[in-house]
Image 1 (tube, one colour):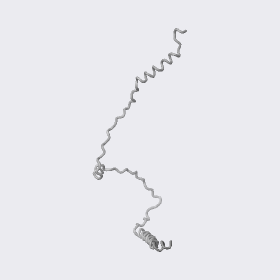
Image 2 (tube, rainbow, N blue to C red):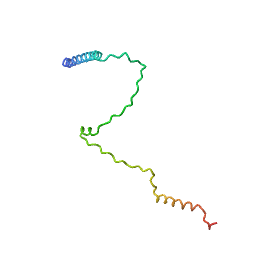
Image 3 (tube, rainbow, N blue to C red):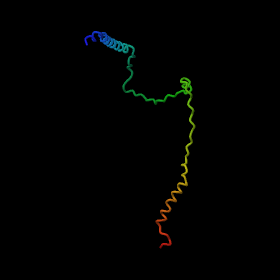
Image 4 (cartoon, one colour):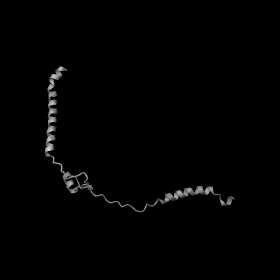
Length: 115
């Protein structure tokens, strides 16, 4: 273990030097930011209200975008007409259901000659 520490002690020194450089850089950055930043204006008060502006979504220039990306322009989709009236019900299926129900009702009723 002692051999490893002697052999790689330079890495420990490098870590301490890097941390000291980082601390110095952050300190210099703090002072420069304070010097460059504009002073706050004294004319503003807390009671001032700002009107919120509605955000308008950004619009893309499709021909320019297609030229930059070398992609084809999208083809506009064909408009599909929606029928306002409901579609007709399949009449043979309705008639078949009605015929299936009729024998059951006829069997329940007594015939005229059986009285």
